[in-house]
Length: 94
Image (cartoon, rainbow, N blue to C red; front, side):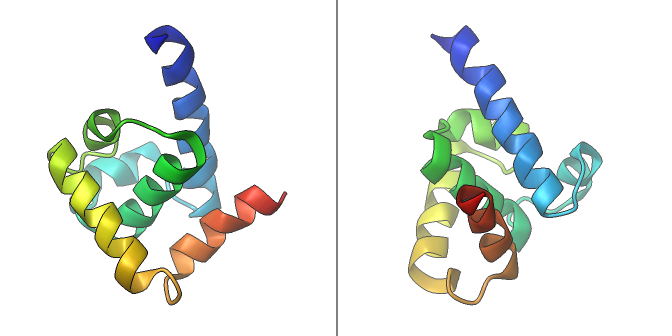
């Protein structure tokens, strides 16, 4: 199953990066909890059920538990004001 899921997750990640006008290099350069990474992690989780462990490694966001916590807080607090989240949600409308 892993061989089937990860290429799909990677495609979704690239779509999200494109929507945010970011690159793989930005994943390395950005802080672990920067807003756009959290919005991207939430998008990946909600649209593709991406595993937190995969996101923590691929998005360079620390531990799987911290990714889960940040995504949860994003759902509760910032979703309506977050420009990055709005851009990612537009991918679902296309």
